[in-house]
Amino acid sequence: MISLSFILSLALVPFAFAQNNTQLQIEAIEAHFSNAGLVPSLLTTFVPEAELVLDFTGVGSITPGQALSKTQVAPAPSVLITPANSSVTLDGSFTLAMIDADIVGTDETEGQTRHWLVNGVTLSGSSPLNASTESATTITNYAGPGPAAGSGAHRYVVLLYTQPSTFSAPDGLNAPGAPVEKFVFTDYVKNSGLGPLVAATYFTVEEGTATVTVSSTAAVVSSTLPAVTASGSSSSASGSVSSSSAAPSATGNNSGAMSSKIMSPAVVFVAFALGFFLG
Image 1 (tube, helix red, strand yellow):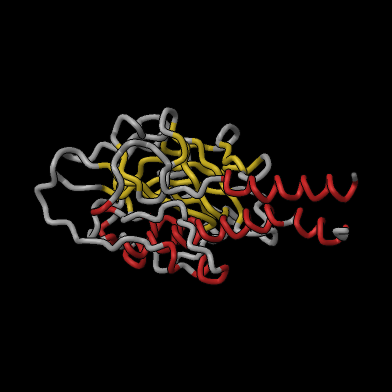
Image 2 (spheres, rainbow, N blue to C red):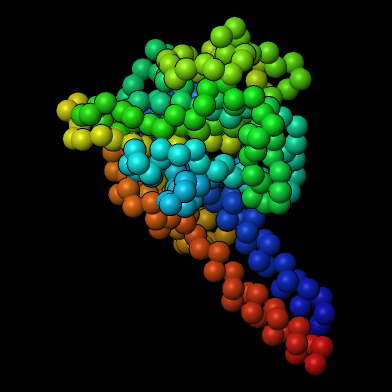
């Protein structure tokens, strides 16, 4: 006879898998940011507390570093946040931003182009959480990418920061209507008093064939990530593809994502075991 405690432990398998999968996605994003040169050129360090996923209409959820077309990213995406684990509490207000960090190898001290900036963002719903801008203050409305032809694959970075009560936006960026323009994003973060970076991701958009030399990047090998080696799994993580110069094609398919269907056998087995025990 199978013990009840054994069956109950089996019931926890899908939840443990989901938590490990989220950690794997976060580690993959960290690796992408390093390989794409966003760390340390744009961000000195990047230790996210959650996974940030963009969902574009007609495309679906994208993977970190995914190559997309201007048409695919023309409308503002839904922003979904999944905490790294149960100890991460995400409440209060947040600031959401999307910036064009240009091509790999760009000197980020010269600034980035602001494509989206919203203060007072709230997170709601169950995991994944939805980043709502309905009651927020949109400083710069979402503006889809439009890199110059031949300028290479631009990296569009979307970041979510905690917004403490002491937050104070600088002049010119404290009210709606600020245009798409160049600014030094890290100066904005520092001068406005934003809190820690919660989560971030990026995608690339390229127009035409590059007429400039772009620094090469390495692929993210998901099997070497700590969350995989710790579990002994060889499953691939979302975003386990080359970033920037070797990004996937702009199909909008989330082919690198770990399917949730992988949990189905565990669920089926638990249901069978419970039926055996109770029957």
